[in-house]
Length: 244
Length: 244
DNA sequence: CCAGAACTGCGAGCACTGCTCTTGTTCTCG
DNA sequence: CGAGAACAAGAGCAGTGCTCGCAGTTCTGG
Image (tube, rainbow over all chains, first blue to last red; front, side):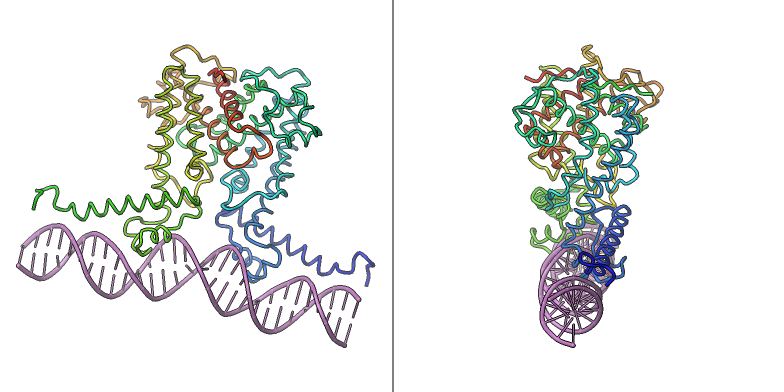
């Protein structure tokens, strides 16, 4: 009675929204604690003190719940990268990339199960719905931004092979940059796209390898090894990072 | 009566060994078909026409069965790498590395679930027993061998940062090369070790990123992108690969 | 040769999972 | 107020890993 028109059905909706966020919080807690494989809908229901069947009023399936957590994770890592890039604006794109990479690694080490959720083995039978790509793109855009800036500064001098500039990336990759017709994409933009993918790969690779235990008894100082790996890959695309 | 001394208990042992290999074959088949998460001991038992409880006479747990498959997978990928390196002996270490990387990628694409099993998210609650490291090392040794060869040829001219040569790798890493005292490891060997880790990281990273769907709508020609990524990383450690 | 030990397989059962369906309750809105 | 939507709970199904007791088989040593 207090609110007109738009508000009448708020009571229930608010309860729903509240429970939904509690549900997500509980799910995230279990995820961080035990990993995605052990995330059980029944356990989350118990945490909330409700029957497991009731949870299905809010989430259509366990996979859907995971999808929500995946989006959260993509956003979290994207936000971390954006923040790191913003903080490092003055030290130049090469050192900024190192800062971003370190921040992402830090995030991954702090919440390994969230990292696994998005960059590890995909959940079986799971195909990423389009809801996730928007969030997944945030990290990419940070990388591309840094490369564009470096290109503008004339810093880029790749040590690796110089790539065919056109036709190697998917058209959608350019669409987000505003190029509706792939044939109009300038060569340097195309090159930037490929290079960004290489940087992305080295970042995910370096963290995965460390987090999944493949450096066990191989490297000793993981942080240092990470820096070296990132710097090496960056050098390949023309970003010269100086370490310490 | 036919065989003396050593052979009398063969009947049982042979049956056991035979069933064990059938069991592994069935498990591998299910793994390749549906992935490690869906690998159920009961299903394997059904495939063999025996009760699930009987399987526990041969394998102590599901995780132990996975461990066996993990070792098989490590050996398979190691064997693939060794073969590729042997076949490419004449084209020089740089191009040989490209050939090895391509062969490993091919293997991963052909049996993605096996790749995931060893280089994807580790199975929850699972800690690799020492049985696996021996097999896991085979791929490393191929990489190190190629780098040593390249170092001997004087090809290496890293574009990336020049690493501190000593103290960065774990002592065990050198032990396998015969250096019991890490302080006696020559600088160039230490550098080779770090570089091998970088190459390894780029290889695993490039395959993971492709296989786990992160290039979806980003790259178009995955094989080409893979080559570029490998060549870029290789350039960072001084291996100059030329792509056709 | 044959008794006892070791090995092998089976079925039932426990606790857990995702998910569905039915029943009953509560809220909302015309 | 009263119809209908939204909600919560419980039972139940099919599946999982794993354990235990019971039965048969095979090997081994006296």
